[in-house]
Each structure stands twice: as C-alpha cells, then as structure tokens.
Length: 454
Figure 1: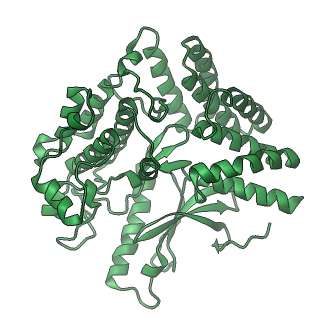
Figure 2: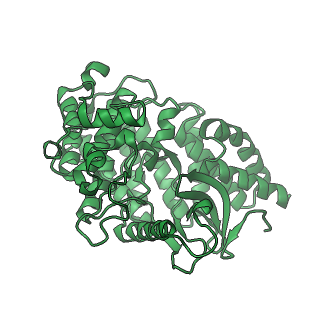
Figure 3: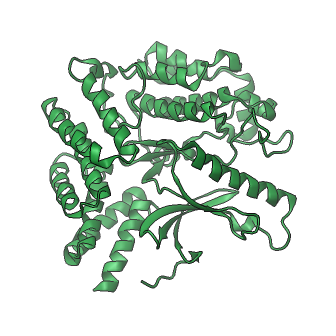
C-alpha cells in the first residue's frame, strides 16, 4: 500500500511523532515486515551534523547505543521491549525499534487534570519501585525519573522509559558526561545530583520517586519555580508536609514520602525493594503485585480504603490476578486466558465491576495475541456492550475496547461496519487522547485504509 511516510531501511514507516527532547525523537511507526505498530527512537536530526562527527556527537551516539543495549539486556515487564536497532558507527541515522506502549505518560495525565486517589498513587509508586529494584540489581541508576518518563497504559500497567542518561556507577562505563555536568530534570533531582553529579546512587532514584509520589498525592512537586529556586529547595529546604496538603493522609505514608525526600542519602529507604515492600502495605498486600491493574477509582471520586483488599476471600483473588498478569506480561497468553475467564466469574461474585471488566479485556487481548481473531472480535464486542451502560464515553478501557472492535472488523473484511465503528470513535479519541496518541493514530490509519479500499 503506497504511503507518503518516510521509510527507514525499506521497512519502518515513520508515521507520527509521539515524543521528543533535546537529544531524541520517538515515532509511532509501522513495521512493514511484521505488519505491526512499533515505537522507533532516533537521535534528533539537528544533533547529527554532516561531516566527521564532533566529540559531542560521538558521546551522544554512544549514549544512544548504550541505552538500546541496556533496555535489551535488562528485559522486564516494566520496561519497553527492544525489537531491533541500527547502532553501528557507520550508520548515518542510528535508531532503535521498541514496543509501542499504549497509553499516556504520567506528565500528560497530570496536566490533563487527572486526580489520583491515595491507593492509585501508591500503586503507581510501588510499580516504579519494582522496576527500579530490577535496574539497581543490574547496577543501573536511571538518573532521570520524572512523570514524562513513566507510561501509564490503558490496562493500568506502568512502564519506565528513557534510559538515555542512566548511570552504571560500578562499571567502567559509569557515565558519559563531563565533570560537573548536570543530568536530570530539576523538579525531581536529588540534592547530590546538584552538588556532586558523579556521586549519583540508587538512593538518587528513590528521591526522584519520592518527588513523584508527593506530586501524585499533593497535586504538585515538593518544590516549584525557576531552576535556581528548585536547586535551593532540593538542597536546603524542607518540603511542606503532605499532611498539610492532603488532610487525612495516613501518617505512616506521610513519613515514608518524607524519608524518600531526605537530604542525606543514608536517611532514605535502604533500597527500591525495601521501599516497594513498605508501599505494598498501604495497599493491603505484603508487596506490590507485579504487572497487575492500578486500583480503579474515577477521577475526583472518594478514595476507597486500602484495607478493603484485606477482606476475607478477596486477597487470594488479588494474588491470582497478579499471577495472571505475570503470565500475560511474559507472553504466555494460552495459559493466561483461562485464568482471566475464571477470575472474571469470581470478581462478579465479589461485585467488583472494574476487575470484571479488566479480566474480560485481558482475556480478549489473549485471544487477539493467539491469533483467534473471530473469538477476539466477539469478546471485545461483548465487552463494549457491558461497558457502555456503566462507563463514561471517555473511559480508557471502553475506548481501547471500541478501538479493538473497529480494527478487528477491518481485519475481517467487514469494512462498512468498521467504517461506522471507527468514524464514531475517532472524534472521541481526538478529544480525549489527542492527535498524536497511538490509539488515535491507529484509528486514523484504519480509516484511511478503509477509504482507499472502498
């Protein structure tokens, strides 16, 4: 099918830019060889001058190469998978091809006015701490944790992205920076990153996570203002206690966040694992459930008590849910499918509609990944019928389910029905997610294909 999109190596169509920074760009791309959408990251063209590479460009290319290799080596459900890369010194435009994570980054979610209940905020932080524990065990410090580098998917999963400035303090490749060069984002940087950038440690990541948890709970980071005022705040001032901004917050949670924000690294939690275990207790679990859904609470709704997870008969379901998600995240869709179907029945008995819908959605996605297109279409269609009466039109799960129905209708050759479905959905995706969101781009691409075919 002819397109007007630029194509790399005759294979990857660069369709829509979904992220950018001073050093790189990320594109929603289409892999012609495997017929799937992917995320393709490349160095910003402005940083690649013609002619022999400068010293700065060599460092940039090496940092980019190291990021791709780190993500590929680390392999964790909380990190995007790397599918392909072109990184050699003779490559004019280095790039890496990664899993396209459906959803939005946490910064965009917060700027959109989304309010997080206490359980939701704690669950996000617990998931991030789990990924950090994996990074730290491998000797890697992220060094630039911030909401823009946290993806929240439509299924309630959390993924940590962008290891471009990660440090490996105990290796020969500990850093690719000049002495004294600041790397990170000021609103989330630890005091030691301002005072001695070369001494960054695992506790520097825990400080950044503390800043993000503070922001999720209070509505803004512990310190705001200019770069100079941020540096002074992080290095010299105590943040306003959370209890002053979140009346009724559990004093133990307030204390834990303040520990993360301690000026001295020695006063912060001992490790990401230790922090994750303590966060898990506020959710009624001994530790965070890896890969499971975030507690479902509508924006601005009263926060449910975390203790409800500890009621008789519910905790085992939560554990089984986590195990089912572990199977799904590990690509074991055939094993996960019956688990989700059985869990959906049991959550019906527990009168937990959000988890019923989550299980049915995951089961439908299992069928889709297994190539059971007709069964997946039926499952997604039935889920739409279930969700429409009980969810608002901008509900993320409803939007994803409606999108899958439209795409599967197109795939099965039911072009008229697909056109009706997707043309009705597309304006809502534009309004809720924006023009550059992956889901919006998928619907738009499908509508263009249908038009060309018809």
